Length: 440
Ligand code: FCB
Image 1 (cartoon, rainbow, N blue to C red):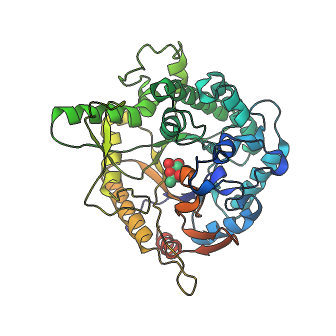
Image 2: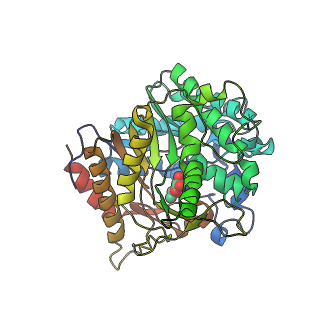
Image 3: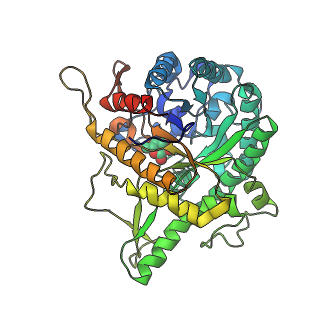
């Protein structure tokens, strides 16, 4: 692997509902993912996050794994329903105790904690009052962010507000394939605005409590028109505006892109865009794959059609493996936003593989090594081309609960046997450890 700049922040990422389990421990309230996963037919094989990787109880072992891997940072998420079981009002100190200990455990090993405040596990009580369709949720989120920072802010100075608001909007509220399972199509658009408003308010609350580096994590994708014709180009532009522009433009330029349902939308109030544009110190980008888009068929409810990318390897999920897409994305963001683009951290990148342990229990996940190596080389080229990228986080440390796909997709550098909770570092873990040891 090429050498990255000195000080480049190497890390791995996880998320609360995907690994913690312990859904009833220490006063945690229900989240929308508890409700969704326990609704028959919503998650593959009826899987739930009730136990997951039991990280809530086994975190010291997982912190050991981080230490041995040699990462300098750990991105995890804080479960809002542990902190405020009813979504607002008094804080549950026991819920915060867990993160307090985790932060201390990380710092003892010289690992920088980089918590995400919201990785999709909304308190069910908040959903019951409208969830992100309700403007009030933005204010509740900022209060929750403040409460967490009041407790951890003496040791945590780098924060991520939201994870992938586009995916939460699309899968959770527009198509209904994720919690809270609402299929509102374009009626879901207020969810975009309220998440962004909550982000801006939280940035202000965190800064007021001494945060030195605050960012949001967006899922971004380079969009490839399916063919050379103008219809495909137009459809690709609309897709790009929804997936990338809807969350980046208002944050970085103070304006929403031209999109059906967004101009003069009644839910956008005077002053909101100033809050949303509150400067961030960095931008988190999750990259998995490019998206190929063509003109929609006559019957399509959407103004675009997402098409498969053929002729490239695929992950176990069936996602196309296109490392060069990460280079295109980085350079594309720099060209699009110029001086308005803050430094970038790749906050997630990785792949699911169908790996199984061999006879001696080892996991030879060469496809994951190839994936990571290819993407890191592409990222290095982007840095060489002048894009300001400050860090890279692998998704994920552990195999975990992959949302609507349950435990069927394994993304970990470390295998988890869900019957015994035994952790087995895969070949990719050993590969990354050696690669990191060779970095400046
Ligand atoms: C991202 C999510 C993360 C994980 C990966 C595979 O969209 O942020 O939680 O599920 O995909």
